[in-house]
Structures are given as C-alpha cells and as structure tokens.
Image (cartoon, rainbow, N blue to C red):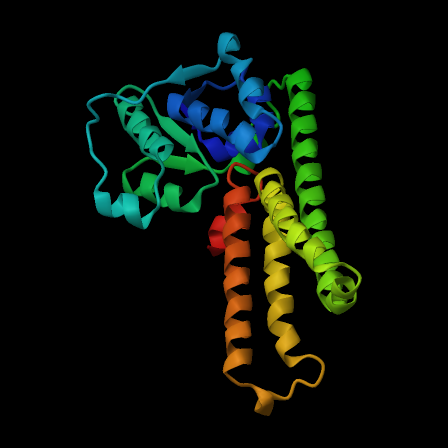
Length: 275
C-alpha cells in the first residue's frame, strides 16, 4: 500500500510524518506548492519547511501524470470545488492503482466523495494515526509536529480574541462618538478618518482572521442598534431598513474574510462543512 497525503492532513496532522519509517508515503508536488503558499498567507508556522526536511528521509514528492488515464469532468470540478492539488492527487492515485494499492489520506469530505466515486480508497488523518499507533514512531518528529500544532492553536486563539477585543473597542467608540467628535476639531476629524482607514487596512492585511471576526460582530452591532433599546418594530422605516441591510452586508464581508483567513489552517475543514 502507498499513502498519498493531502494538504489538509499535513496542516492538521503533521505528526503523520512520524510514521515515515513504517509506512510508504508520498506527497503530490502541487500539495507542496500549496503548503509553500499557505505559510506566508496565513502567518502560520511554516509547515512547508517542516515537510521539506523529510524529502531526503523517505518522503517522495510525486508529479501528476501528464497524460492521466481518466479526466475529471468540469461539472465535478465545479460541484466539489476541487483545487489543482485535489485533481493532481486523484490522477496520481489512479496512476498508482496500476501497480499498487493507493490510499489517499484526507479530511476533505467533498474530495473524499470524488475519490470514492473514482474507485480510490480514502481514510482520515485521525484514522491513519490510530491505525499506525502501534507501529514504529519517530518520537523526535512527533514532538516537533506537536509543537507546530500547539503554535497553530495558539495563533488561532489569539486571532479570534483579538477580533472580539476590536469589536468591543469599536462598539465603545460608536457609543461615545458624539463625545469624541466634540473634543476634536473639524481638521482633526478630516485627518483622523483616513488614518483610521489606513490602520484598518493594515489590520486586515496582517490579521485577517481577527479583522473578519471584528467585521462580523460590527455588522451585528450595527443591525442591533436599530432596535436598541426599545425593540419597537413599529418605528422601523426606510432609514432603519438600510442600516439593517448595511449591517448584514458587513456581517457577510466579515464571514468572507474569516473564510479566506483560515485557508490552510486547522479549522478550514470544519468551516467547509458548513460553507
């Protein structure tokens, strides 16, 4: 048997590489390309470097066949939102099936359906680790991988609560906006607005997950202020309706930023289950 490792597995379960001495594993070249991109994009620990260190120690990097035996339909690509690495992984599995028994290790449920549809066996990362728990394990690699996982969790935790803090701060500023405006001059306002805009843009570019959380809760607050504190629906008019729509739009934008920020992180598969 040969195990073909998907991108999400290396991100969520880098400990899988500690089984390299007991199981034959290969990684598609396009998966390595994704890992390389995910490092700087998500500001997560650079898993690419961690995985690359095993190339000379048992891990094989495989290119997809130039002339695959079977082509995936455009409909499946669209319906299952297949990435280039997904397609390459499937083609590699089909090619390996000619001489071996390929098993794709993935936590991507949609991709797993496509693989099974094409006769390729799949298992999840947890199942792989459980099955190989009694086999030879490189403890040094396992410990290094655990540190990466711990760092990922810490980064996600900090990002989420930074977004919550920014939401609370934004709410306080909005609540006391009249007092703030009354203490600064017109010129001060004209100067402050673009500066705040630049700061928010920097915040989004460097802490996109936090910014997405902030944006989502800001949208909720914008909508709730229409009703607060009386919640009298009879007073709703066009102005209030527009504010509610604006709040909903901001919420959607926040979710969009969250979705983009978690690409290549441990919570991406969970996010994809719902969205």
